[in-house]
Image (cartoon, rainbow over all chains, first blue to last red; front, side, top):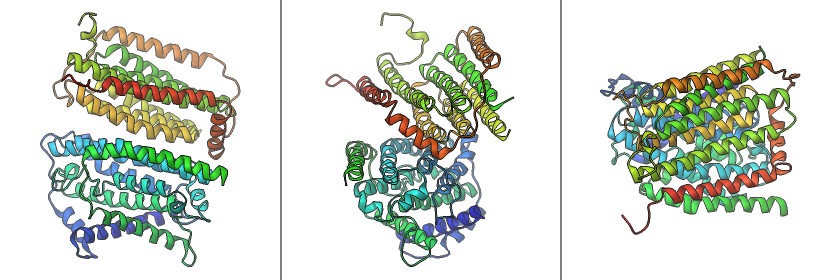
Length: 297
Length: 102
Length: 167
């Protein structure tokens, strides 16, 4: 029952994120947009490249979907609506998101195409830039909660949400979450316009529909992770808990999608440079700052 | 056939496969993959011993953490050395690395 | 009983992927097969109720093996595997050595009396217990490991960086 409800809410969230993304990039609000484009994709011909690495080509879209779903399974929507309350939930989110990278590497190498391969390997470079920025803020959050249970992380923010308690960590995790979901300005693997779609270039028909669905679910999962770790999950005065979770998740997703409209795409070298030279010292400072706050204040 | 025996058998077979890989491959990268498989087998044994014989002594889990760290480190340094050799000689094959003189 | 089945299933997956690593001729397939073998080992840890180590193994190995895939494409002669080269030497000797090693380990596993099998463990307690162990008894080990990691990072970067001035 829990799992069914969680999947329904996840799919609703993915649908709304798809509508939001369309609205942010074209300026027109089409509420039936995802359904019509999904049906169109399912009806189109499914072209397979001439000499693909068959296993990778077929496995990459479902693996992307599975990775996003696994990460969403440990995030709570309300105190008793969580699919799997693992004792190491906060770490498991990161473990599941690592397989997003594996899926994109497979999607890059599989189709035996130049643009796809460049996109896939660029995402590996982006991963090296963002992987520390994803884990270190989670460490600081777990320090405050004194546990890795995601439900306890939310409950530890009853007094003050982590976004105000650890602002540096919040900004770092937000940027790193945009990098995991390869949203603009960090959309190096797909790079519409430069790489002609990158890793999604060689996929057509129903496989492309699965990849786009997986990408929407990934954005919802990451927005839910930001709201659980930093904005206090289901805590809030008047509405029921699941309503607060949904509102916060959608607000974070809308902010992520809007931020990309105003910043040009970052170059690979800059992403790596800034991630390592600026991001990691800031994340370490954040851990130190949270440690001082917890022990002294 | 307890779970301990199952885990020990799996660890032993992984160790054997890794040893075959290390001794039979000619390329540095493949040899390192063999070492990773061997260390994986050793970790399986360690966790089985911790879980089924001494679950109260967390030093067992500490050992597994250190082995994981060592896996990452030897890969990093090994690839650094491989990069240096590739720049100097143009390949990382072990067959061509047998003579001392450049 | 269920635990033995799950451990055995993940163990078979780990062994099968490890065999694929050395039998396939496509290099990227080899690296990703190693990734799934290590992920299956992480699954074995989860089946044996060592939750933290299992999740850690699955997470670390995804990143490490993907980096290994990049290095294979950089340094190996036939990354796509379509040329059908044989990249082994001393094949017979290494098969014998591998079989002997596995047999020795199996003999130790079956012939030793391991003693009584312990009971239940709880995952939530483990994270706390491991943390206390790191901070109290094994603090020196962890600090040494930290310094070693820093040294290895500096050493690897120093070897791999291009020399200034020339070329």
